[in-house]
Amino acid sequence: MLKEIKGNLFLSDITSICHGCNTHGLMGAGIARQFAQRYPKMVVEYQKLCRTGNFQIGDCYLYEAGDGRIIGNLGTQEKPGADARLEAIELSLEKFIISLNSFGYKELAMPKIGCGIGGLEWIDVCPLVEKLAEKYSFDIVVYYI
Image (tube, rainbow, N blue to C red):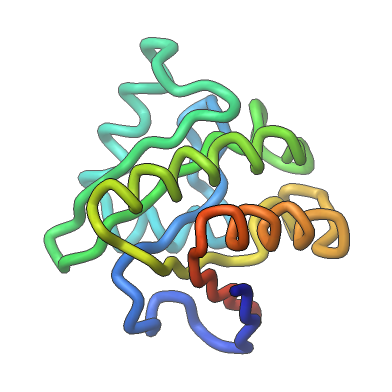
């Protein structure tokens, strides 16, 4: 099931959250910047993965935060800015959901991934997210401002 809520993703009670990332190791704007500010140790690992070529389009880097959250850093675009790709969102989000399933999770919270700075429109991204929610019987709550 997919549900959209106007509000702050970081105030959600859901402990598994994700967001879109580029493969250049930059989290300087948008919601990625907010993740970077909250989880600086995660950024160091993410940047190392990017530098060594171990974080590519369609990848999912999982980070277990000290606050009890598990964060999916999804490889949705190569470059920072308006470079998000639908196929990359689908691949990386599916990897995240599969990983969460293996840990027993059945829900996740996320922004309108790939939209805004990423350059995509939610009307195009939403059907991909809905399809994955249905395929894996997953509850996905999408937060927007």
